[in-house]
Image 1 (tube, helix red, strand yellow):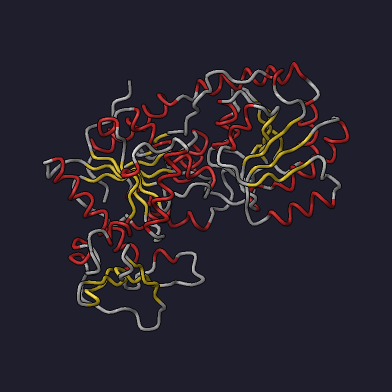
Image 2 (cartoon, rainbow, N blue to C red; image 1 turned 180 degrees about the vertical axis):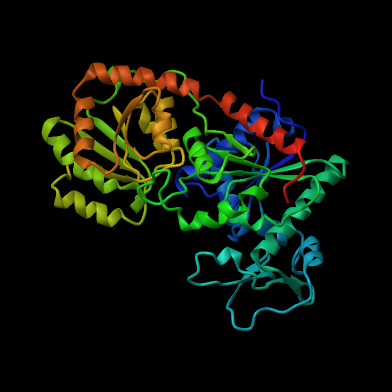
Length: 466
């Protein structure tokens, strides 16, 4: 049985919005749910913490949807910075804890500001609007804090605002626990937030930073150029008390390139095997599904082009694509251009899209890169075989024990041949389906939580790294 060290646990993310950010949102919510099942906070699980400045009503709607989807038990466990910054203010400005954190100062005269209101429509915070800068979160432009008689002071950028909230939350959790030295573990799910926590040095706090995606540029080989968004993070990674990699391959590649660290741990997102997966013979013959955003990195156009050859070889073959995104119109035009209207369909976003894995003969993944590939894990748990591009991390690791086929990344002809081969061979589909179920059982929740609890224990045993 997994045992997490006694501590207060926070899972920190930029935002958690149903149907947004693909597998990241689901993976983050599931991690918190698994921690609850492993006994964190008496089974209530960690506090989920977000910093997106949407309205309180929007956040309440998100909470309700997560409850409906079975990803959240108690809506109160999903907390938001701006909800709490305006809580109890009654039109008197920001909450007392935020007013106390503010320092004397004024807003930047040359910047535009976005005013954040409380639930009664009164101002609480002024956020600087940083246009055209991908590193906007690093801006130290003053963030304004409203008090009962006007602007009460400022904080040092977004980082100052986020750290003030976390300091308040840590203090309140310790008061509730009646232990001023109670350890606090922050599981940081966001690279941007992690960069802003390098200077967060509250005594007794440990930061466990997760990784969700590949850190390289194409061709995504271990020696490929670093993604620009990750370069600064690697320079700061030794400030984190633990770093969780989703696959052993990525952890090894980073260790070879930057040097192994004793803070590294491999904690994959686990599969939750379906009680009675649909056998291969009971699935719709020839039906292939994709579950991903319609975004450039997913290369959905490769799948559509591959289906020209598949449809010619396999009567009745069809491709159902679930998800939405900026390329929808472009992909729809491609389907028409290739004469595939009767073969390929864009089904849009469906909340329970993973249910399609109970009927499909195959899941198809044409991504350019992955950290792990939660959709592959889901397919395996449903006993649905997978055909995926071999992109180094993720599918390569998940399918190493069977359950699908890997195709050279970007090779549309090889992709079409692999799909055709599996759809034409019932015995192969049955074999891959059985392998998928076995692979899912090897990647179970218990193993993932044991690895996470071990990483936390090691972090708490040593001194904080900030």
